[in-house]
Amino acid sequence: MFGVVAALTVIGLVADLMGIVSFVTGKNGPELAAPASPSAEATGSPALGATIGTPLPTSPEPEATPEQSASPPTAETVYATDLDLLNQASDIDVGSAEIRGEHYGHSVVYRCSLYCDSPRGVVEFNLGGRYKTFEVTVGVLDDAQDADQVGYFEVFVDGSPVKKVSATLGKPTSMKIDLPPDAVRLKLLAYRTDTVDSPLKAGANVAGGRSNGLPELAWGDPRLTA
Image (tube, rainbow, N blue to C red; front, side, top):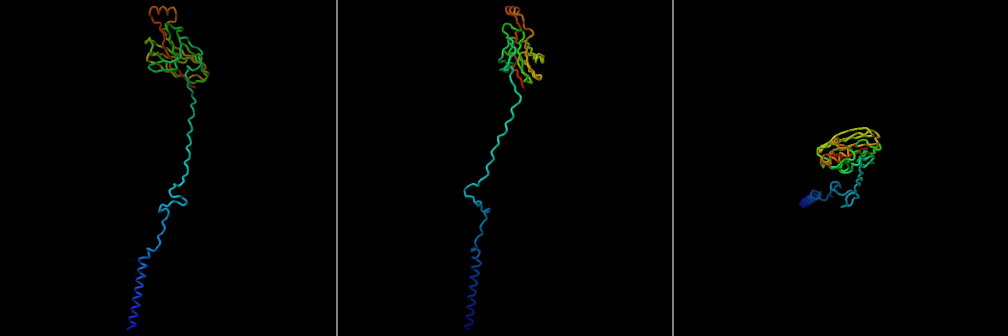
């Protein structure tokens, strides 16, 4: 009888011991395991060698290279009135003109007072073989006293006639002329066909209140392009 009691006691102790072991390994075992270290990529940890709070160095931006400036234009445009005058009639002036409401500040103006020293206004310029084209606007001056006059304008290059046009008040005419190679001399001629060319007759007309056909004409900003 005593042996049976002892055996049952031993069996109970073994069962209790196994329960304790099962409890420890089953419940507390996972909690005792050390957690795996998260990777730097998953946790957003700074890269090796970087200081927290300091931005990573970046490659400097290349300096902008300034754009190449456009080549200067080869063509040169000048006012004919800035060139050397070879010949100029006494009634010719260089200055401003108003033609159909437009202001031309570098013009050749042909205008007479009482009578004309010459019935035709002539001016010549030295081209020196440097220019290829000639451009101008011709017309009757806006403040002309004779609103019915017709002005004629002729262009000569090295003594040869090149072009002839006419203009009236409020109706100017523009010209563009290709000059011959190595052109040297440019002559501009302006006139009215009804201008009195005799001083005596002009004086008599003034005394009698008659018109002497006085021109009031202008070459508006004559330009030359190389």
